[in-house]
Image 1 (cartoon, rainbow, N blue to C red):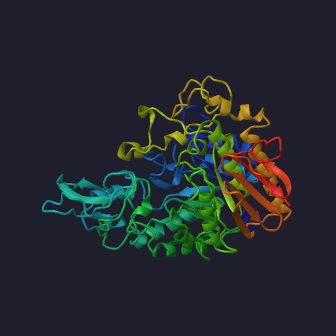
Image 2: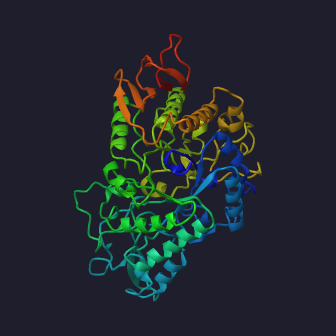
Length: 526
């Protein structure tokens, strides 16, 4: 598959929570290496690994102090290179996270800025500014952090006097780079080359719509509605036109390798704006976020799917479908929890795998893992203390074994507690338990991925299929792809009749009369 990313399925690994090889309670690169056979058998084409670079871990790796090294918590560069070799040997491509909007406050360049003088070249690499008011005690503007609270922190100057403020759109430990300083682009060009030279197949770009801020850093209009955890709520802090030149440059770098590398953007904007990042010569893909957290409602899904398909760049950038990642509540819980939430999550998984384009699965999604309601004292997400939002519940370690002792196979040392506690009964969701159950979510996911790959190989499906989306009846969604494939989602409270065609796969058993049960999805070939 030449342009594999156009219709590939990518599996996101949150390394802290995937597999712990050394028994310290935190997942690591060697743990990933040991589990690559599982991913190859699952049937995905690539893995995306959330940050493992050197970091104080204030935001669990999204605060990077050295972009070209591995944090000892996860291993070292040789361990990464071994993982990369092993992945390629299993025909798995590897995508690495890149965090160019901000760094760690422990980054040497930010540390140098702290001890430099106001107006110095060192401070020009970041957004330092004088405060307002007679003593400079008011932040330079009224922007708020995505994690809640002000987006500015005041420093003490080297002489101990109250000093300037610096901008951080996330935690105070994550100062924003100043992308209007030309040295920033040069620094990240080298970072991009570093990982491409090591053989990674692509980069997932964190906060890809960020980077540049409005010149002069003006106040946000008083009528603007600022929502925690959404940078797009502040148009002065993201989606500036200058950012596209960065991606045109990186695309030229990516295309200069053989095979070409892939650039995937976390562009959390309305589809009409997000699609601009995937114009020819820019990013290959931008995540389609609209289904994340969407209600289980056929009309809502029809509207979202239609809008995303209508705004895709034809023949260049198909839609990337996703209903789970490391920042949102797990699908079974989002869809109501319990037996019904689990059934809907299975149906949603079959749906994203049946839509045209690429699909992204989050670790444990194939197991139907629900959100875990952790006690407040166990939560570690920096957003929790600032805005009351915790993403820890979707980051609880993967259960590999069914046994109720230790860490369910997550850690090499069952005596060491994992970094986040696992709940009672977690082993029932484990890989081991589901491998023994032909009706499990794991078996459904494997079957869907195998069938999807065959249908693409036989040219039954294409990333560029013409699509018609219907409500038939009102509580059922029908997605007709090309001439012969139909995806049906029963999203109402009554069974629905299947359209004409041969049933290929369903997320649950049909009714005795052959109708599709509520909260179930099916693929048909006609």
